[in-house]
Length: 508
Image 1 (cartoon, helix red, strand yellow):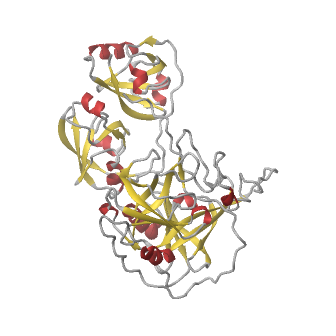
Image 2 (cartoon, rainbow, N blue to C red):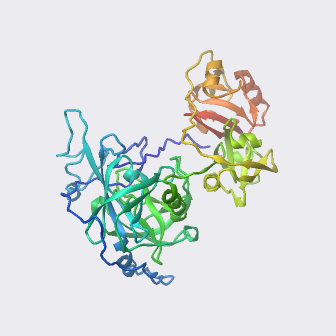
Image 3 (cartoon, one colour):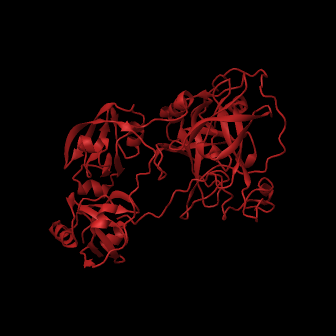
């Protein structure tokens, strides 16, 4: 059985601020660096530049790739992005546990958290600087980077390949995809060619170009390690996982295939130290293209909304729901009054199809829903109690609300459970605060080594249902568990840390 996963995603914003809660946080690769005195630059850069480059010749299968031509052709279209912003405006200092080699420390002197930085002992407002990467997508100056690179910025400066620094305007940014669109006043700029991220395969060679630690036009290579990675960051992105070396400052830079086409936007890394440790994540370019089109047209992104909380179906949960195999997106919660609720979707349903798209795992559904025009009626294929049925759902627009359920408060009068836990009934106030309609019991104690402990239950969790049977009291939980066959996993719907999800608990 699975133990409760303590891994937390910490996306570093500007200056690589780390929000890590575990031993392996996720950081965004934004580098902070002292910027040299600004060099005056003309408002318009009209130097002639090459047209979109021809694709590089692909490497022969079974041989190491030849990357020199690809890098020479595409480096001019890769830019550095320098940002100045106020402290506390989304641009933090360096993480406390970041260890930099002595030869790289000079790039960070003068920054918050480093020797010689503007610590501002007086407690007043201060200015901070940070750096990322980007790439030019049109000759008239449109540039793609990460949203976390420019969030909270007072001003943005782009370093072009010909060493010109020009001010940039933020056309728009989308936090859910971590994509931002910039615009500089320039003409005849070199541009990248867009690829098709759907054509990527695991094992395929890819190349990153960017400005790690402020070292612009640095190229690194590796392979695609996995596709459609879903990270616990609340985004609508099926990430490309690679082993390409990306570091702070690579954020927003392009990921190329061997044909010299952009297939991803470098965004995040897994790291203990703040630097590269063999795992990096890129936003598929097909996702970025859709976002960029909307940002260019209206400065913001509209997404479809279904109104469900979902999770993957594990082998144990598949058995408890009488599924032949783990598949689909398991519905853990349904937003009252939302599109799914109106269509009749229930907690415990397994969504296996949305429109013409197949839902093989939970990570497939958000992108399908998000890319659906608002107001569209879509057939949703579900499995309920082992039987397949189709419901028509009218997709609504995703609002900028967190929708999180408040964590329940402590209660009293515990009752001994039968799975190695102690529970007690909820008060009416606790039910209202968790948007429950009479159901639910609160976990007060979990016995170490018991079935509940092995499944990941913790004190303060709320048990809502077992095997799709609502639980209204501690006695009812005991009765339902006692009536279930031994050895078969129980599908338990819980509220944990404000999130509603299913877990599989093996009855001893």
